[in-house]
Image (cartoon, rainbow, N blue to C red; front, side, top):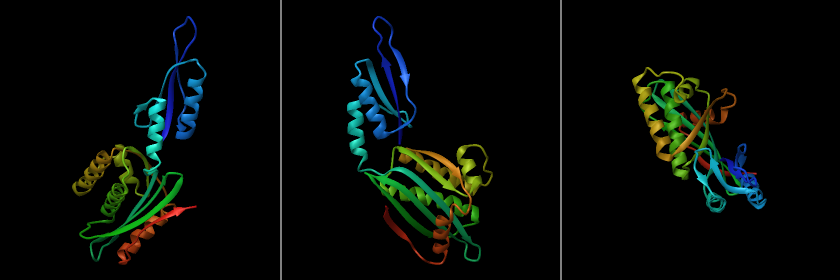
Length: 218
């Protein structure tokens, strides 16, 4: 999560001037805010996050203390595979995040029956990834979603239409889940090579190999 500061600068005998900072990491934002308030020239100061919630310095300190125990800085990779002979989809999800001062990675997959196409497997894979986030307790924060399914990502951005009824149902499920978790997503289209970890998980699901692991990244 990034934060920006807004504060009013006091000039004797003049109207206060409103200043806004660039987006800052949480620790730097708090340090800057405290320095500004300590200057004696600040009439009032607020911190805003990327979801436009605002806090005073006292509230910000409490918030950051609470955030230490919650997953944040979420980056999600997803991929889906399809087996035409069995109408099964393999769903793969890789999630990187921070909790406290530590970094973690979750790798998970799932075998899904009654798939109609590889495209549908991609949609199901993203929905599966969001379910993993929900199980982690992630909510009310930005997340970066990365995948090699350009069509799906462009549809979620609202830049491409979706004409297939079945895929539209998956889009509705994805958007409802994002809303339920109050996540603010950004979508990044990546190459298959960059997405090989999620792709491997999807392939392993089709082979009957179930994976659900969490590890700290040094």
